[in-house]
Image (tube, rainbow, N blue to C red; front, side, top):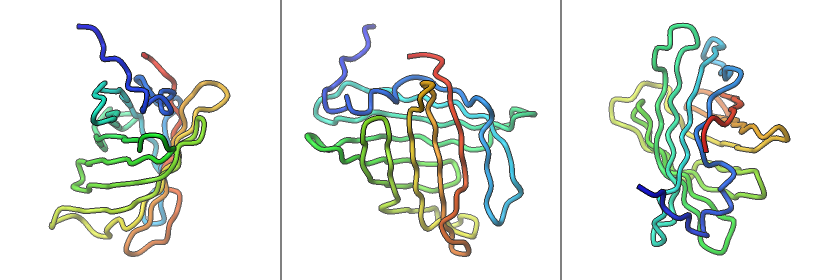
Length: 168
């Protein structure tokens, strides 16, 4: 089966397409957590549907020693046609669903939470705000920095990971 033709609307995010693996392991920290490391595999692909203008993604993180699954996230990235406006919609295995919005400028995408929903029995403290920054660095590696605020903590950097591309 031939891959779908990329819709021109998603071209500004074409630098994110592919399968990426964390290299080195990502680093996580937060005032209420012990610092930790994780491995992550990211798949970002376009679906070629010109009416929807979506790219889809999945993040799968694992403990670096045991390979035990830690966090999963999947969703879509949508660009508003003829602008640099981006919406990022994700569902997580923790029961959190996010809509983040922001802008893509060159090879950098900065987004912040627009709305966050959670299952009724989610663990406290609850996430109240998320910001993410993706950028393609000078070595051709994808970097992601995630900051988070909860009901008990102000907006603080939570995750930083660098990925190397393994497939287009």
